[in-house]
Amino acid sequence: MNSDRVRGARRRQQPKQQSEIALGRRLSGALPWVLASVLLSVVLTGVIYLPRALDGYPVQSVTVEGVKDARRQQSVQTALSELVSDENFFTVSLTEVYRQARALEWVEDVEVRRQWPGKLIIRIEERVPVAVWNDDVLVSNSGKQFRALSKYSVDALPHLFGPHARMLTVLDYYHSMSKVLAPVGRKILRLDVDARLTAHLKLDDGVVIVVDREHYAKKLRRFVNVYDGILANDSRALARIDLRYVDGMAVQWLDAKLQSGTERS
Image (cartoon, rainbow, N blue to C red; front, side, top):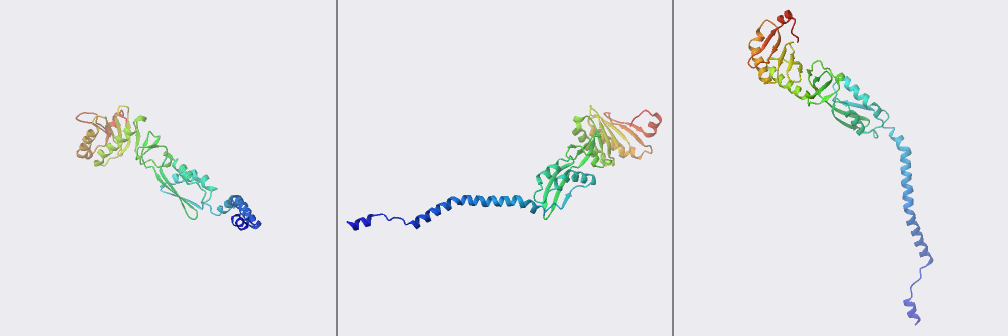
């Protein structure tokens, strides 16, 4: 009887085992708070000491590549000077540098990157001007208008004039007419197109050509053929050619113009 009670009875835990279990539970409960405290200490240390550490890595130089004129170089430096003056190599915002550089009207595209240990490299793709439009804006080789007359030397560019809504049409005129005139070595310095798309071309030798929109390329080729065979060998200086005829042209010589004083170029 007594032996059965001994075999079926549960063994009571000793006081030492109970204390170890309680200690383990307390440690498990306190562990998250310990980890949180350590993390907070790390964050506070970083907040306090990281800026001082980063101050040891300033932006030492800014290199601008792809800009071909000192005036445009100065524009980039002015636009970006405040962005990089108080920044260091790690914290300077490449996105903001890109945005400021891209905002310049003569800039087509921008690439910004860091180069260790303290260099910022900005590579710029410039818009390429092909003409001056209405003495107001430049026209790029992609047909975009942009305001940067003071940033370029425009003396060698053709000056195009016409209705504001007709810029692309006038630009197409210029390219098409330039190709037709190329065989005789003549270049267009100025092209005026009116609302009816009648064009007045001033060439690099001072000659003025007037041609209307109807079959203008054919009429210009007629002038090229006559110029190459007859007009270029004439001792008199040409002043004006009017091509607004179905089968011919009106030619005015410079001497006759000076005598009459009535023709305008």
